[in-house]
Length: 440
Image 1 (cartoon, one colour):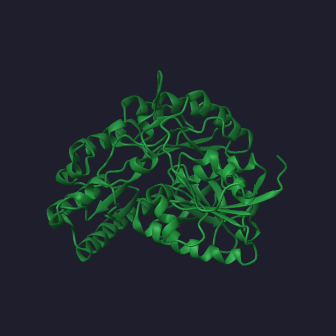
Image 2: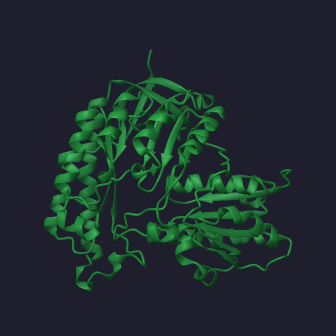
Image 3: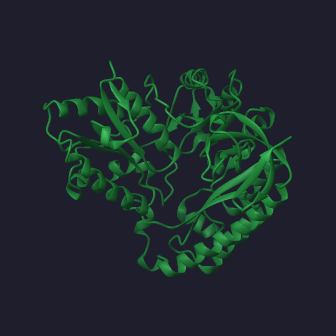
């Protein structure tokens, strides 16, 4: 259809949500909506949300209030809230906020454009929900619209079967659904044709992917062999599904980045059991050892939750020991955030860790990780790395990019270098990030 209408899409949360926003842009483009960068220009505003932590939901509720200002000049504006928070809160979101017209969950994006048009032209009243979970919806045939960035986010798996007790995802995204491998490969080839050289495969536990005779290792290898693909990443794998074949593929395929995210969550077996992670700390460490034996140069990152119900000082010390033993290149550390509807919220009241204690533990974990990260990155100063330029940096005259290992580097360069590769010598580090110069 002719692009006669305009949509503004704002995304919160993880890379899965970025991919979903691009799917929604594609669904709206089919109905004649051009995606714009300014909500003041839009006929429809879509807020794509996250429900992993309470803070993310609080930010979205505040943002909904801010966006109501655009109705003063455009009373026909449609405001849709989509994604995991929309699925979790459902009808109650309409009651809690003024001016939300549509609440749509992660399996409802195909119907979003039709609902918006019906509402704009008076066929249905404002205040509608699209919340049915669909065990078959993998969005095959719906073309994503990628407007910015240097990475093509390609979802290969939706939903999750693991049901960790702290996680809301299985309840807002439903059970695991894996796409057909040929559909994934077609999307990869289309992304390359559009100018992308870095592909990131997405799934809630992406390495549990299976479709017919295809497992994740086979899919990963096939993607890496697509002509024009220079870098392949994937997130977020589950430690239990790290197979020897997957490690072999990472080692054998030059396009696959030497970077692996392995969410540990805790170093305590007692906490891991209450989380229903289905591995022990020893098993996690054995996985780390297998990965490093197969790909010695690999950079590892992780997720850690502190203050989970029942976590003792001994349990927390075990997490610190894990951080010191593995020495992750990067770590995302959080204080436990209760999510209504998850099993962890039903643990005995005396199990819950007070905020003062969990806050102190988080500070200690962050300090321990940052000290390790600084040591790792200081050892890399003076070396040369290939960097994919992503965007201009905040510092004047600099651009920002990432190495194969996911290290962030700022260095002098031109804005037109975006989506090109430059060989950079690392000259210093702040701990998490590097400064560099073009290698001569």
